[in-house]
Length: 517
Image (cartoon, rainbow, N blue to C red; front, side, top):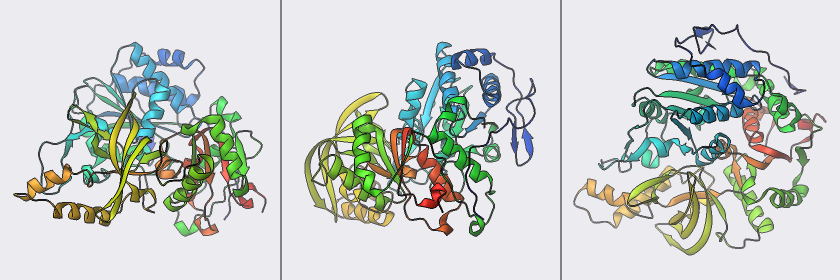
């Protein structure tokens, strides 16, 4: 059955008013979960910092935050869910500012470098990636080669840990230096290792889940409670007044409403959803391939190189679009040039750091090529020595690094595991070591085995874009048949269009997406 998107519906506040004794309150599979605590009178301060009358959902969230901060329970955790346009970002930004005035410790975290940058921007405070905060290089090695990571100590007692884009947090460490670590569990173990710490997990349940998963465990209260946390949930559903004038947010709300028409447990073959865009907004523009170059030139001229991104369905198509942008917009003729913009696609501890202390360059971190020194082929792969510009938190640095050229065009998200293992075996074949432990330590110090894996940052998949935000975003429909129009596609589309803050270009969407068939 086809379901058409019309004007976004209004959502009223779910449930009954909250008790002055129990909070947060959440409906989880029909169960009401409550945590007891005493209020801290945070509410009036938050309301004043917002500068406007909160929505009904924001009022409930403020009350829940008040109770979270006052809680004396171990593992006190609040999940703050909110769709695009419901005021989640504004509320969290106000919370951080209020706590800063009170000199209460706050730690801001996000899954990727780009997401941390966005969080830092709206909270007006430093933010870090989760990996950079919770892991450190272990001085001990074992036979697994890249398992030399351990949890860093948490020295911030009585701190509120604010983790944005929590829908992206999975239960795998991302491979490489992190092996098969459970990122979600490690996050909890780090946060609650220090006395009095609280955890606020923020996420949008309509966005894509972690790669390889069909749901976002960090947003599921039942899963958090099964891990021993005292977790509750509050959800923002009311669209704020400012969002009603934005075509980007109106269409995002319409896509979210479309998702609500088909329960997640519906068999995939029965999920027939046809998005139809709401038209008539200046911030949403329909274009086809013939208009693309002119639209890109306009966007780059208006918003700058760092604030334009094209989102597509596959790494192959992202590479093709990136090559077009490089050649036609920037005039780049070589495969890698000065001023090229790249995105790191695998966590790396090897190339950054000061005074012998490793620093993480996280998956999703943007880097700028300052100079290309040399390109060589070795171990069946190609490598480039570059000087790169890189933001480490709020500090801009330049570093010399070796990057893996092959990942620029590979159709996988990063170098496939088989090729990575072949590279490691080739590197180790040329080493002389007394034992296996020494061999792995030498491997961890080899620049080729630890080369930065990168892709062009001009066009990316929705998973790579998730957590980031650009002023101008181009979303390519890609190849989509009627059978592919299911919940997964709608979530992909929702995630893609909500990356835009000022201007959204909808590229190559066929007439039925505009209600013309």
